[in-house]
Image (tube, rainbow, N blue to C red; front, top):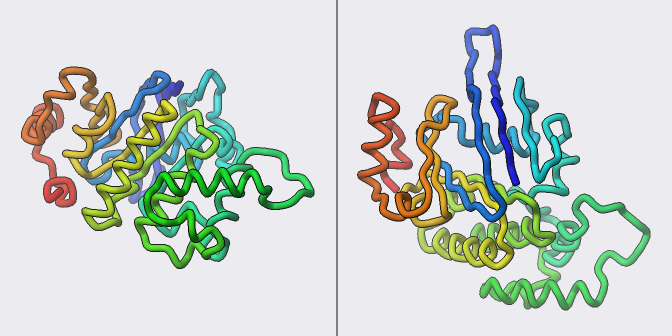
Length: 264
């Protein structure tokens, strides 16, 4: 489903602030793969996700999604292929629009705009049923402005919007990092339910090593722009946090210096 081939990215090239964020990165995701990504500060996790989403142009290499070379496509042009949930609950939704309006916009992502009613009766019924599956009571608040929702409610709604049209690839960029532990656990449970239901190919960046081990069928670790560890199947299922820390020290030659990961 996804091929990242020899992708490189350097920020501020030729200056004192030069940063090689991605160095000859190769990554392949098969259809239905759920891959968690971990690594220390500046490892290249978010940069990799931004390269796939088209936020920044790659310096070299290619990115293919379901057989289509998307390397040169703009971020809006890639939107019809991708679903994304950001770390900041304020992103991914329009705060001044109603819940039902946000869902309608998500439903039409990548499609031709026409002169027609914004939300049909059938769509309203569908959105009500989908919101009820979240278990947050949002199905009774269709006309509420999204800006009035809590962080957890907004992330749950954003997750629903990102998967409404069943994207070819779902990108989750530390989407529970800004939430309290109880709310984060709820959003992660919803994530697993939605991904399993639609068999979505998913790439999830996280700072929480326990979540990285527990979720998905595959785990990759990044360090200084490289993928240094890639594990799946029974080996991944048997991993523990001490195993990951030891593996990081073995392949990187140093200790993990990331307070957020260690404290989680």
